[in-house]
Amino acid sequence: MASRVSMPIIGILATAFIGCATLTSRGTAVQIGKSAPDASCRPLGLVYGSGGGGNYTSAEQKLRSAQIELRNKTAEMGGNFVEMDVTAGDGASVSISGQAYKCATLSGSRAPAAAPPPASVAPDAGVTVQDRLTRLKSLLEQGLITQSEHDQRRREILDSL
Image (cartoon, rainbow, N blue to C red; front, side, top):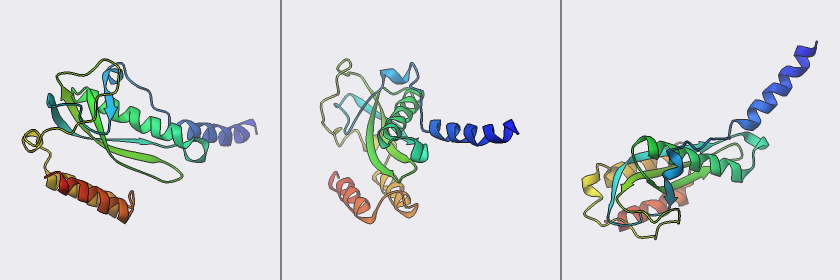
């Protein structure tokens, strides 16, 4: 009888901690921001992070977990900076996509200055505008972003050409 009572409690506790992510030692060296800090940054590829936990986890914790996953995955790729791209979520989870970078220079633990990478860096990086637009369309089709979010981000991507 005791096992019947404890099973629902274990399930609730497990659900509450699903959204908790742990920053790895390599992940702590990765900075996160809205744009690559300078021309010394070389794109490495796309990364995705998510934070869940349903109603038992705060929106802030879900977002932190997603950012931690972005940082850890960037570190795994050999990067030291991740540029957040599209953020989407619902009551149960938050998802963030981003671009991982390896930057020759970063300013200590302070957030890097917001400056987009020069146009000459992006095309050689292996992540094309077509890749970004395809990924953006996929997020829309999966219901992770709204039509207006898709249209706004698509405009930004095309304006960067």
